Image 1 (tube, rainbow, N blue to C red):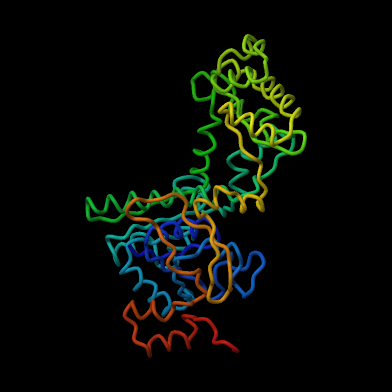
Image 2 (image 1 turned 180 degrees about the horizontal axis):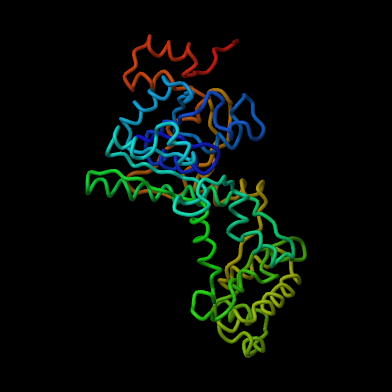
Length: 395
């Protein structure tokens, strides 16, 4: 499967890297300045920052200046031989380039044309700019955080970009499967706002699912003020004592059969209604022992418990070492770098890391040659500024 990837930053590259890990030939089409994410964070070489390295392995980079008609013609030639066109430009920008779905389908009627952008074209927000923070706010995530903490805040991860990227992956795969049945490609729209609305309100529509509403919006357990890592005598642990079996085991371990008879906590539905009191009790108890003591006691009682990692300690987690989540590799230009492997396992067709994250335009010549350009034509594209390749060492 060949993907022409016109995406940048996080959402689209996250999606195309997953597809590349699964074996797709991903051609990353970049401007002469390169993907913006190349320049985020520390780096050893210009344009090879850590987020770029984490999102762009198993791809080949061709650098084209699409303002140049020769570069646009080269892109159209790549599209003719592709299975998927993935982009996160707004549809109006694609149309200005002559790359609307109708125009692309004339070049390649079997193509799966997948756009990932902020808002669906059928609504009044169509064409508005969208970034992860803006979408988090638009789908009420900071508001929900504020109901717990008293201050609205964004989540410290690009959740909207990555969730929408995952949605793009399964949308593309479903469209490719449909093409196997029908022989036809199609256009897919994967809008961030609508995707994240479904993601958030699946939890928090709650009582407003019903007409008339049976309760307010907001899943009360997720909004409890003591739903957080709990303080022990010497640190924190993460524990969830919620279903009937775990609640019974916890109370018996403490010798508190009186809590089992408390009408506020008899059943899971009762504990949900009284979740603030439930979590406050658990937090008070957890504070009486050390982290190691609780980890041992709760595990022995088969109650879900986990350590509270920092990013640094997570990278040293022994389970992740067991399953080979991280490995050190030698990158041709960046030296020794740590990368994460594909999570999970496959009995017959395991994903693989085949290529390092490329330098800007690293594969321009080979990709254009595959598209049918002769060597002298490629030289002219490079000399005229329509295409770019990495500067020679010392330039």
